[in-house]
Image 1 (tube, helix red, strand yellow):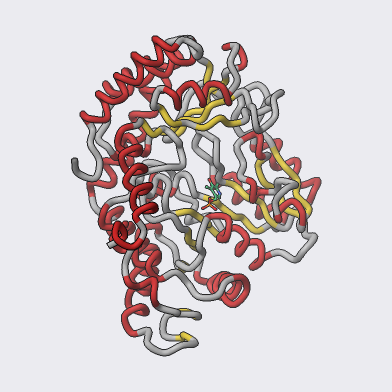
Image 2 (cartoon, helix red, strand yellow):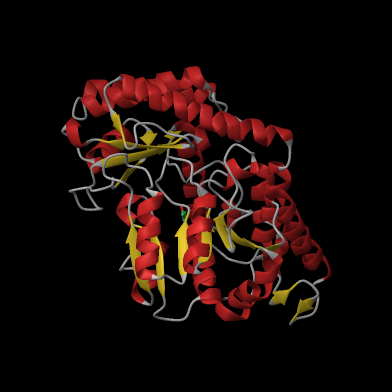
Length: 410
Ligand SMILES: *Cc1c(COP(=O)(O)O)cnc(C)c1O
């Protein structure tokens, strides 16, 4: 049908599909959603206005939409072991705005991880609402160990007296001690916000600790390791349900995207199956092997290793910037993103780091031995970014591997 109505867009989607199939996707925040998730996303639910919450809508005609949203909520509560779930945030950033809206007043003080150290824009960057409308105090990782120093975070909290402390990050390869954050928050009387956008799938798969017991509010995207639709959610204990729901609607949003909420319900159903636990565990195994291989080939990782799906390469000693590494790899069919590293001397547009993650390629079925091949290819490109013969050879290998690990049927 699309082909008939708009052959230009149809053609571009077809090209993008081919591109996604024939390249190696190592962007740590990306994944391949299932056909079931995409079918729900592309469904007739997009037609329905459903302002409000299930059984308390402002328009008529919500009998099935209510059932769908209730299912999504109940599944999320069960999957993450929380008292309340809000399915309506459109994206991770919107979920975070809602958490601020629920607990803080304009100008209030809060703490989050520095963007350059792995925090998200919405955790206090000066170019973001969080840094503009609120008083952000950014903590960092330790210069020596490149991991979080909870004593330092505690000291900063005691000194700055934040009303909220955010943990959970965008480019931090280690396990977070959520209990330590709870203790710090209790000591200074702060709201504990955990943004599990990157690690939600690992938590759902029981291979990463959950903040559910500790956090006052948990925000998350649903499309990263969780492998659902491009969207988000907020989880919290029952006592914060009202504040969160009111913040999302009518505080910040109008009608919810019920097609997307249905897709989230499908994604939670998938994540409850035993195979998803195996998937999550393979994601981490793959990342560990990839990390070890890269280190063995002489590359340096921030923190020296990974405990998650993501690896942060420090290219400082390699005579190549993050930007140039990203471009050279893309030319060979390996899709990654440049990333600042802690204490980076280069700008966020250039960077000294490269972030890679294993969530997407693990969905395609890759295992440890494939990671070794992948590491060798990455190293070849990083060592010879301008050598077109090397690039040519690697792109042949990429095509070969992609044929071996098909996606969305061939
Ligand atoms: C990806 C991410 C977000 C933002 O999600 P969007 O859907 O892109 O708005 C927020 N917080 C963290 C920690 C993330 O990694």
